Length: 67
Image (cartoon, rainbow, N blue to C red):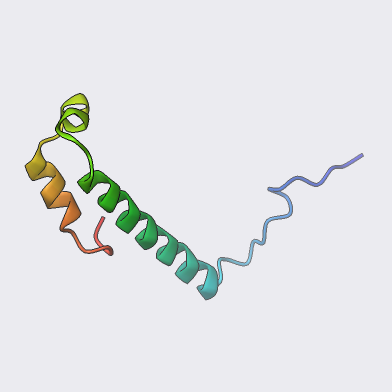
């Protein structure tokens, strides 16, 4: 008896252009959200994770397409 799993049902013809674009836009949106959140951290939050305000400024000022 055979079973179908998610892996066996995967399309092996490569990723389409639409999927690649969608993934890229999702990544960019996540970066914007994460950088905005990071900019709202308090001094205590920064101290807890070992970051300085200069680290935050450097990260927050990056354009969304840069990792």
